[in-house]
Amino acid sequence: MAVLQVVVVGPLRRYVDDERSLELEGWAGRPVRDLLEHLGIPSRLVTAVLVDGRLVRKGAPLPEAGLVKLVPVLGGG
Image 1 (cartoon, rainbow, N blue to C red):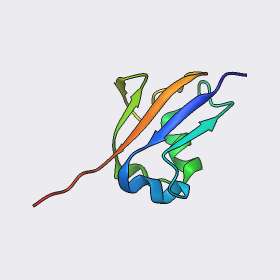
Image 2 (cartoon, rainbow, N blue to C red):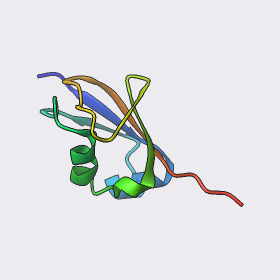
Image 3 (cartoon, rainbow, N blue to C red):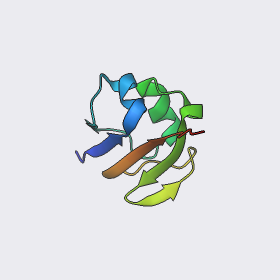
Image 4 (cartoon, helix red, strand yellow):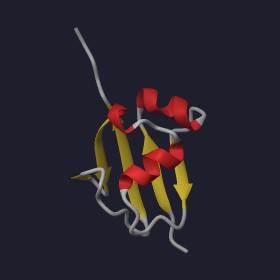
């Protein structure tokens, strides 16, 4: 089975035991928002989702294999 690599950026890592990268199987066709729920990451904290370098919506289906990058909301002042 193919592997989906999920890279979690910055403060979102606290939801995945401070891991930078996870390898998951069996997510093909499921929406990104299901992955966020599975990881325990609140959707509102994710500004961008990149799948193989392309910006996608949270309702987009995940590929069988590839690279998913979850980018957090950034604040400043």
